[in-house]
Length: 238
Ligand SMILES: Nc1ncnc2c1ncn2[C@@H]1O[C@H](COP(=O)(O)OP(=O)(O)O)[C@@H](O)[C@H]1O
Ligand SMILES: [Mg+2]
Image (cartoon, rainbow, N blue to C red; front, side):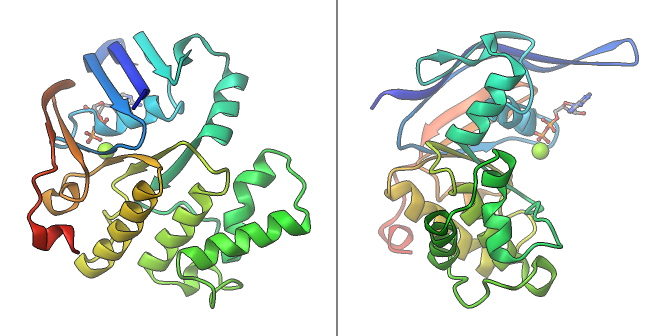
């Protein structure tokens, strides 16, 4: 499998009140196409910062970031936004849905941001995505009429609307109860089995067990990097 993401000597600093905050201190990692990675580590270890750099939401301070063969660190802001909208899907802890829009409209949103005209075929595809995540009977509901788990399903459907190569999640089950978290993880596992590469931040071991690989950060460095393929048969059948 080719590497979909490769970072070389990745350094990320923030500059705050005359001080330099050294957040990521020279990371070297490569993620294969089709992998399902959990990024773990204590609070403040740099997980979200790394995910934001990987998601082209933030720029690195030094080092290189290759997405496929392309060095993202060389790109202009316009190119980065193009990469985000065509290549990446995002799922956040707090869902980030627009409250005034319906389920289907929220799924359509990334297309509108790209200036894509919503013809009938595109609209049906968004409905199909809402159905895929089990919200076929909630198409016209608004986020506040949905449970947290249902809102996260909308966010998952939205993340798929551009058929992204890579899905990035920052604590996607962080606001959900255990049962709902399991449902969301089952959905992510299905997406991974269907070929999507997933990189997900979590601080919960139960959630990380669903991934194929666990990378732990500590103080902005990689502390450990292990394959998770030793799940028990009971867990595999979940
Ligand atoms: N925009 C910012 N400006 C300054 N410091 C920041 C900024 N964002 C994050 N940090 C600092 O970077 C460190 C890592 O943050 P973060 O990546 O959010 O950690 P995690 O997601 O692992 O909890 C923390 O010490 C945090 O205070
Ligand atoms: Mg975080």
